[in-house]
Length: 208
Length: 193
Image 1 (cartoon, rainbow over the protein chains, first blue to last red):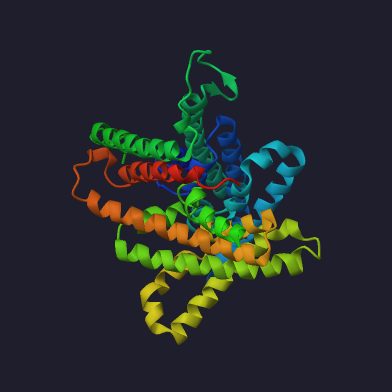
Image 2: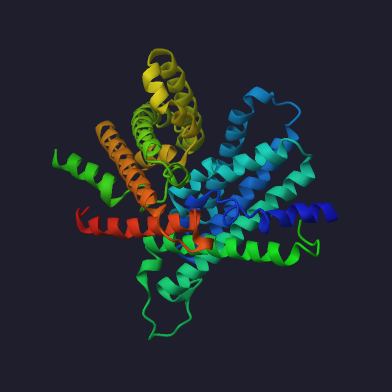
């Protein structure tokens, strides 16, 4: 149980896909104009990555090593199509908002990387938790970016105005340049925090 | 004719794939450390986008639409483009070794990349005609090449700058890309669609 928890939390902190591994950045910039969009994208990716990890783990004994990558891509694309149809049927508005970026989940490096690095070598349950952890880490990072951009860029949070009428929204945060600049500072901040943690806790043996 | 020119310019500067649609960022930040590599990458991406757009247009309009299989677009395009790029790589290695030396290694890097998949998907979504798809694809590729070459030149100069330590590397690259995107926003009034 403890082991599964470790696998789960690793994706959220020490191997966070966006801030630490700098993988799958495109969606982190493109769909984070509002916190709600960021959350939907995060949950979609969590669904795809954990389902795909389970499929890969289940079939790992039957897949020939040489053709594994095309097989992983096919299975990822299948899961994405299932997700696409589900969203289209039950949440058409969100589907429209995410647009092409939903289909592009297929080529997210993080999903293929988890299939290759973890799910192809481990059994079903740990693979599922690995996917869940990575997905949650991704969702968390997306949500942080989405909340900051929505707060500064339109003065609201999940569509509710929080700063009152006198607040002049800084439009740049909603537009593309704001996204780049914000992510730049967040990457810098996460580097600083990591360095601080390593420096202060290394001696006590709490962090490897 | 005017329509096609506007579509081209729109794809190059106004809706630049990297700076306003955020596609192909992994390559954009990964390769732009080196100017020569960026030029090679820009050429490779442009040609692959163009060829795979043509191919996927044919498959989409002559196979998927008549058979009512458009919900399979994603999976078909991914497999089509990935295998096409592999094939292209083999053909170039065999028949044009000089060309292969120049940008062959980049081909495999872009086999499953969001910009190469994104352009055919957008073409299918907006129901472009064949010629329009090609113009859009070439424009997107040129836009990508322009952005990555500009970025590589900026990062060249950045090497001598005194960057705060936590921002060094990826952090400052993002901020510079933000400035570049800001500059490109000046083009947004250029074309009214």
